[in-house]
Image 1 (cartoon, rainbow, N blue to C red):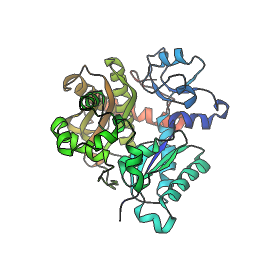
Image 2 (image 1 turned 60 degrees about the vertical axis):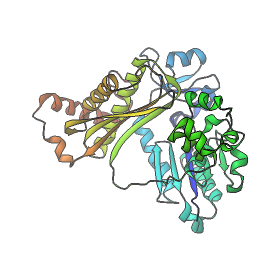
Image 3 (image 1 turned 135 degrees about the vertical axis):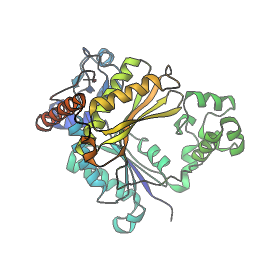
Image 4 (image 1 turned 180 degrees about the vertical axis):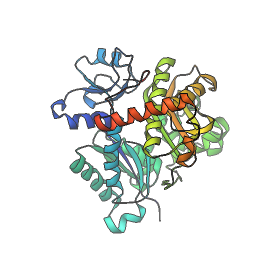
Length: 386
């Protein structure tokens, strides 16, 4: 039996949550991000703001020049995590096979749920409806035989989208699309394909896999498979946490090193907060960077001891960024920070005789307590995007 995969993607998630909490903002352009005075950047923008050209990762000052009437609100990541748990509770009514990609999107394998809940399209529409009814939020849903097609489908009719890939019409739907809709086709790869006369998925599909691989290497074989609608990757649902990470894909590539450092600090803070919430501490900090040409690199550094301390994770991520990147001058498309190599939670207490670490841990504890009581925007660290 072929797989049945759903990709659920919340529409303008951060901004939609804020509008839900403040109904007077409905219909108005809303930006979630840092202040223009603090060199902040946009974390999310409502569709009303996007009509003016505002997008995530844009400097807030630029966004306000494009859309002067926009309402700018500070991010509340702890609150968004709470809302995300409600969304995932809806997913788990229909399948235990859920692979979260971020707070606002996930893959679901519902192959084993069809007899119980009906067709794949029916399950997708029920999930979409229950999220709207219970959480007052809008999700776009893609239904397909694999992950690549499901993610493509969820983006077909945004916002408030729903698209079901008919397995018998995959080639008909894919062929007219620009080849840039395939995962891994950035500007550099697109230029290589254009030199072969390939601009659409259909044109790529009619070339031999061997020829594409000769020009693009192993990545070409993968692109050829995607052009045929082939993607064998399963939905991965790991019960045991092996790493905690946060990453963000920018709507527009970022070249400015200072902006990237600010984003790294923010991502490290989110990861450290999640570690402490789960009573985890890890030894290995990993930086993930995807450049404009879709080259993706990861760099890791193992620390002498496990940590959940914000400053240690942030400083290590920044060190990796400053010292270990192969292409530091290329614009960045995606940025991520992760921590792995977990030991028992008690292990993180072994070096508390170190006064610097003890002081940093106390600061983290105070910040966590304040945010738990008053919200995640009640206190901000220096160097964050807010």
